[in-house]
Image (cartoon, rainbow, N blue to C red; front, side, top):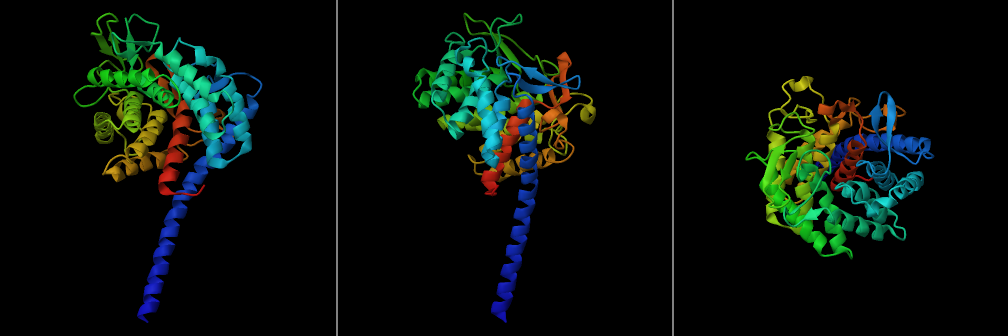
Length: 392
């Protein structure tokens, strides 16, 4: 009788476990299914345009040329969706759209080459390499490094505006390509540049509470700070949500690549700022700027949520109390998986997520899908499935 009871309890616990695993896999599979449909449909519809989808403007898909800073996210999303599904059509389109960006390897007019080249060619090399992929990334790293100055210790972000030497927090995201290049046949100087940029950014971009300025400008001759402020946030003293996400993700990546405790401490501090901020809504999708006085009436930014979730999932693997980070990221993803944020098949212009904000002060891309929201959402879904060992 005792053995029978033990067997029954064991079978019950297995059943409960299987039910939980099924519930996890159900919403994950829904996200992947929608993503596969949306991306395949959009890729086929735009296949003859030689342009890439960025967002929706005036009810139409906004297409951009390869030199737009967001150009790498659509091919990158196709690669990630291919990795999640094994759908060869996605692989075909991913390569087709990636090839549009080949010229960028020699483009020195932007700091965003990590977004543009590493999200596209980096995933191509990882998942379905072709001859020349590696060299394109190495050349792009060389082009990116041309924007570094020893005087400031930083990679210059923009070539417009009245700033002398502007550097934005977003630039932390482009360091990963430099780290990779230094480890894969590129100049060792690439790593030195990435480390120096990360170090100087720690000193100048963050307030005492680990909130971030968006733009810090420097004197190009002395390296002294000229100004601290914002361009896409609410005000010079506010916390722009996507900027916080860029910083979190960037320092998590820097720790992965260097194992320098300072970067881990920085990532943990930024994560704590985000996770404990009183302006974070209950569903964990942040306001576009934490300091918007409208509160819950302000636009939400699904792109900031997706970037944060992906970063937290990786950061959680580096710390002892990783479960808290994982659980927070899981809450974000489960919110983004609801009908409020996840598109219905055939809707939302072909994009995956709704309700992101690009540049609110310029009245640009407000409450709209954005290709980088989709990219980091897919990356987060992939990381989540791997950590939960969910078989897709």
